[in-house]
Image 1: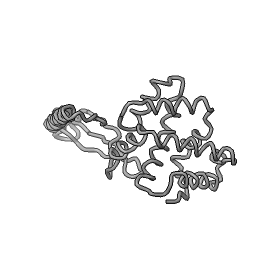
Image 2 (image 1 turned 180 degrees about the horizontal axis):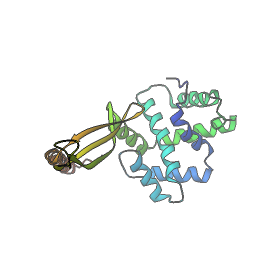
Image 3 (image 1 turned 120 degrees about the horizontal axis):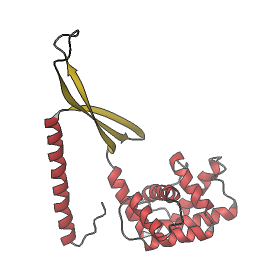
Image 4 (image 1 turned 120 degrees about the vertical axis):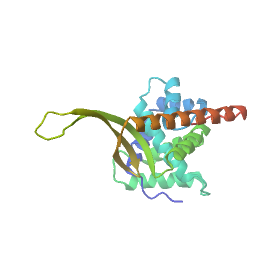
Length: 221
């Protein structure tokens, strides 16, 4: 399949791959080739940084994010990799972005670099795990519980007769490319219900992990 455009979110990663000094590119490629089987972007970035601590984590994550996107996009495609990389180079050139522009020599080197990185097993496996993690309509981002005391009045003009402790659960999440949030009121019983549900989830996860160990399957979660 021909690549006609380069999504804005992945342009910084491709630009960094293009501009990496040869010694840095070799260090990243070698680190990825020697990386253990891990699941997801942050885990693989950490594995690379353990081997090459002189690199910046943000740079590694930008590069991996672009690689993961391209790896998933090309999965199952029967078009030769060289043709897909050539169409990506053309799309970068057509973008009009000077950070993505490629001379003929740069085009050859850029495609060589991508070809090497995309054939590294740790990259393709981590990309698949990352895709599975995000293959839902909504994905969790963060949570906070806001707790406050609310006065209780029998009459507005009188002194409060008491107070009630209340909680407000704030969940932020990703929906498509959007960052959203919602709130849910909780009482003490609700918090206990949530704690029990989370403890059950942890217990089930531990049980499943023991099954994976018994089957000698690596846990990539």
